[in-house]
Length: 143
Length: 148
Image 1: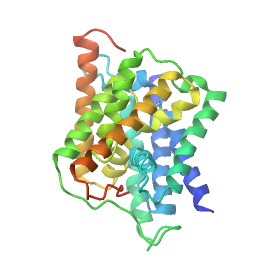
Image 2: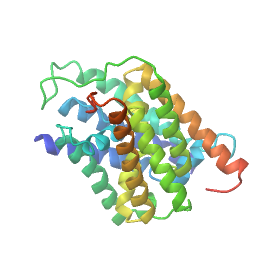
Image 3: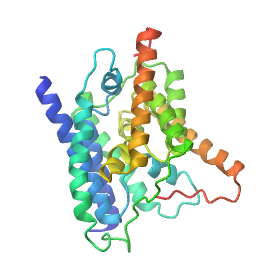
Image 4: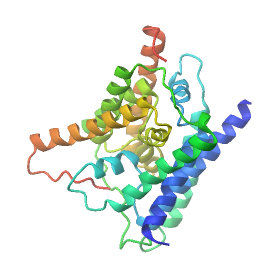
């Protein structure tokens, strides 16, 4: 059902918005996932606790879903492992350089009407779409 | 409510949102980015739902003098648009399009135990460390601690 897919997408989005609001209310922090991971990987970071607990929540919920509704997670991948590794490096390097990802720029930043986040989000949507275009329609392979 | 419980609850809410909305499925993400093919617009509703809720609640929360467990709010104040911002986001988008995964869903997918999920998170972490170290080498005295 197409309609229910849209509804679930919006409901899931609302949960994400609630999560970001709760973290702002409790810790006064932006729910930017790449920033939280990058901070934990930096020995100079002092505020480690909220990052670790937030990320633990992400993984624990994944464990819950893998037991009850495994089809909602990606347990297999049709993408070659070399491509996954390249993608991982690009995502890590890019989010660190650009100070954010889909959550920090796409959700939190746009909700604040931040121009930086609006520009970053436009940039990663455009290059993401271009990459899929090249991978799917020009080289005819991939996903 | 202890700080750890609040952060864990927020992270769990985020994870539920990702799974319920389909963000954890790379095929769906790639379908959303495939604007010239069989475009699947559902994931635009994830962003719309998240922004609609956070747009309102963020403003209500900021009416407080301070968050519950801190003396002040840590809201980013930078306004400069530079090559790092645009270039970094552009590189991120390429990786996002290649694998159909961004950092949050990648962590939630670790729970499947799939080798591809671990490989993605490991290389993503490596990319972050490489970027930070390059910065450190180029500007040794600069403070590289994250702002948020």
